[in-house]
Length: 311
Image 1 (cartoon, rainbow, N blue to C red):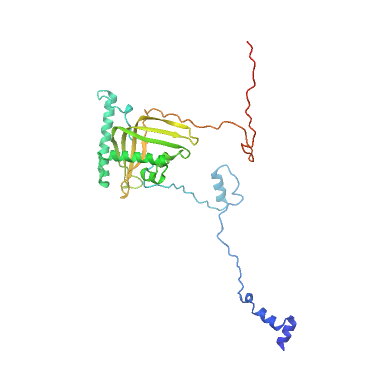
Image 2 (cartoon, rainbow, N blue to C red):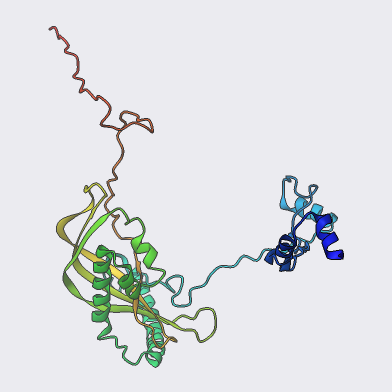
């Protein structure tokens, strides 16, 4: 009787009442969402966030407001596989010639060469302790092969091979500005046999972290032509020319898997200046609007008006 009164009061039939009770949505446990406060972000108050002339004034206002501004530590990434420059760069004599020892300048040049050779011999001993195959007789030929292979892969823009032949310091110097250019380079012949002029074994970061730097003198014939993106010659000629270069090769001696790679070049102060690069410029013409094309414009070739000249 009570059930029938309940269904009548709810104005539902017993079948509808059972269906509403067995509805799966009623069986689901209601989910309650409680707001949780997250970590408060660091933000300067309005009195501190105003514009000030100096950072000291802003720091004083922040300190007065009870906010401690953490110090920003400037970090620079360090590449351990190579050094950041050339350690004790070799200074070639002017004109690459040996002066007479009877003169004052020649005697000074001779004493400087003796100091450099003494330091090179000590560095060669350190290099041989880590690289048993290193030899002053065979290394110049190996260095010349690395030099030729690096420039050949530069003309082909093979960056994967180029990274294995040059260091991370030399790579950006070689590829900078060559994205929209075409380079034709060839090694014609060697005028003089390559020779080692200086060897250094510097340390970096920590004691015992040794690097070997070998400066090789190369005198050869090369051809170089550089084209811009429009196919115009920017620099160079087809005719081979004599090139005298002092190339530095480096290796991370502590690394057992390290290899000799090209690290940079030494350009003496007495070297002649390079040929200027002829750059392509845009000539002023008809200004186009964003929705216009050059073909849509009627560009008529205007001939100069005829002028009658009287004697």
